[in-house]
Image (cartoon, rainbow, N blue to C red; front, side):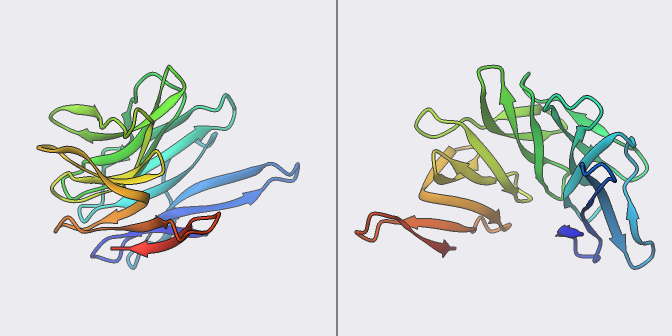
Length: 204
């Protein structure tokens, strides 16, 4: 069992996994609160997946795969309380994975495109999906989003910060994994220490 995110009310989302008698692996989405204990999030039985984020209104970002089809297709959804699954369609590729959700229900994620690359995207109710692009002509992956809609992630082995009025900002070699509402980004920095291999350091 793995917890992926927690909101200010102590509600936790994540996943638990196991193996069938035949040896194949399965994974289920979980939700935990003091009131309910740990329960499974209601999705079709033939789907595996994980919950990656929850905001203070209980909206959940999740990613699933259809285990019966086994075609490598992954789908991203938003799961508002009392509403059910809302599909984040993606850009026509085989994989769309949700990474994080902010207070407004905006989702940061990645999605394949038909040319066999993947890009970070942001979902907003009023505008739908926005492809955030990439650095140096490469693909990208989103990992976090703050309440202003700023997205942190990685592209071409560089960390990035995306802001609407600026676009994608190169933060240097590394991987960004989190962002707060002040715009501070946290992650790993790849440092050239003069040796054949880069060292990896945390950054803020």
